[in-house]
Amino acid sequence: MHGRPTWGNDLRRQGAVLTTVGPVSLDFGAVGKGYLVDLIANLLEPQVEEYLIDAGGDMRMRTSHPISIAMEDPGDLSAGVGRIELSCGSLCASAPSRRHWTDRSEDAAAAGLTALHHILDAIDGHPIDRVLASWVVTGGNDNEHPTGLADGLATALFLVPPEALVAGFSFSCALMYVDRQAVISDEFPGRFFIDPNIHPST
Image (cartoon, rainbow, N blue to C red; front, side):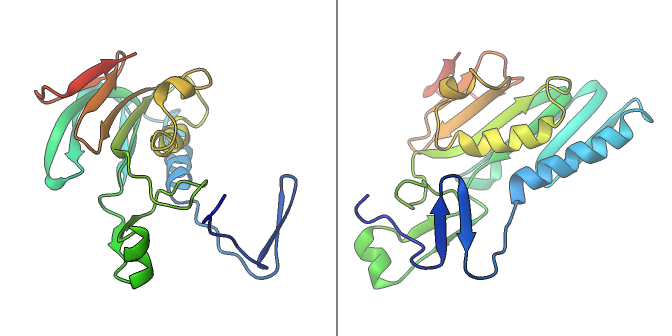
């Protein structure tokens, strides 16, 4: 595509195989953190009846009473836009509000890319600008690694609508878009605070 960033001579692709000419550092960040939560939970489950693991927002729990979890406002990190009540399963959220920066270069300004964050559209290389935040809940018994799955889905929802993902994965979710409108799936164990722009989703 015209204007798409390229790796130049640093990377070669043959089918599904990528070959680099120099050292590469891979950051498995989100899904890796969710996977680690699942490894810890799998160690705990045979030994304890109740637990709550919170690794910087990647959560997995099994408790006798629901835990109340605030849904952080992506536009105001000191406020909430809703609340989730969960006693069993995994919860992950994704938003660029904590990992973003400003590019003040003339090239960035000319391209309209002064506000940058870590969730990119692989087609054009630009930061996603349609979604503000996503919240995903997966069941504890639906998958061997439900927290890793929830974290991957929370990021995927910035690029793919929920209805395109439900065919392959079992989850519930809530999304907030840049115009502050929101959608929430029927099975999602939480709610947004009263807002006329929130619409239910299947």
